[in-house]
Image (cartoon, rainbow, N blue to C red; front, side):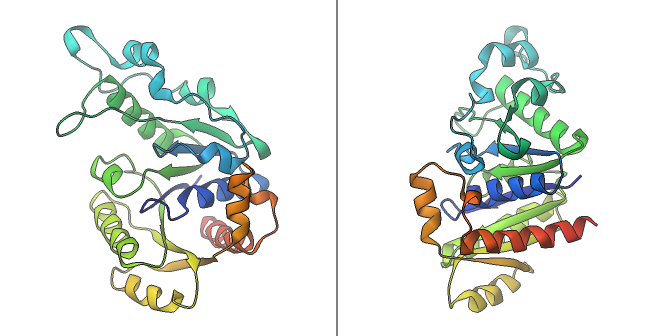
Length: 252
């Protein structure tokens, strides 16, 4: 089953795309695991789950039991093969959601039980779970620096009109290639007449555009109403459906 990471600069629409793709894969008869790896933790709403589940990082006792050790020593390979079953929440269309939460970091980073636990869980999910996995990643490129997406099959980078968003896409692709990701696709969100110009700039980073989502006020209304975007038949959802069809064709 395909493992897809969805990344990009903050606020570009990663979560809307992640949630909608997860629902579409499920409606296509696939077993789907959606992982919220973004500290903002909004994927539940995009999936149509009214209450965000408790993040895994808040289960302190579990993490200490699985990944901790005496005198501050932590386990590099804690037991995680039961986490999806125990803590995954079933949402509409039987999509299973897992919310990772955030790890408090001090100084140059964190090597602690929580960090060890989440890295082991990500490795297990990416390499051993026989499901379509959709990862809604944190904004920017920090997660790639930590290597938590190593082993995914396909990375979608969401961009919006603007130089910073395009430059971030280029840096994400560069770091992704360094950890062995070689399949990328870009989705241009809030696309207008500048879509072709953006596509040409992305080509400089060898990044193909797999879809364009027009600006759609329905998405704003759905967010305000805490409604999953897929429940409406809008121009943006139709565009995401086209992206989904391209992805499924790659799986066949």
